[in-house]
Length: 172
Image (cartoon, rainbow, N blue to C red; front, side):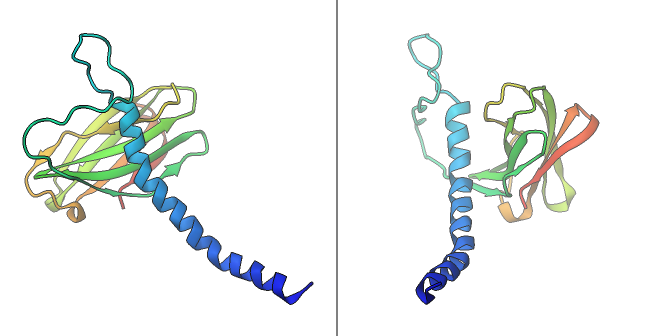
């Protein structure tokens, strides 16, 4: 085998982890935006049904940026995919999990946000069996919205509070 062909193969093997890291970073950035645009349709002012994926008009007043700290996107062998984030906007902070249920059966999810001093906010979400991207959020907490001091965890199970744990996705 010519020397130059082996050199390219070694270079590609060294570059492959960098390419994979770039793809993962792009997906982590695009997934929340893509899911939110599909899940949260904007209302229409003419009394007709909302148009899926339509952008909502901006409310009047100051516009706050939203910060996210997300864990890795994970999946279970039986078909649940999720990514869980801590979300902060202004002085508000909450947990959000983006998920997709391809199991063919309805499931349940428990989502929690833990902050400084062990303060925890929890919510339960019904996970439909329609294999569409969706999200679940905890109620928003007011106060010091420090992403680094909060952790979000989503646990997906067969039934609410019962059965086998199918997937756990965290913000860290």
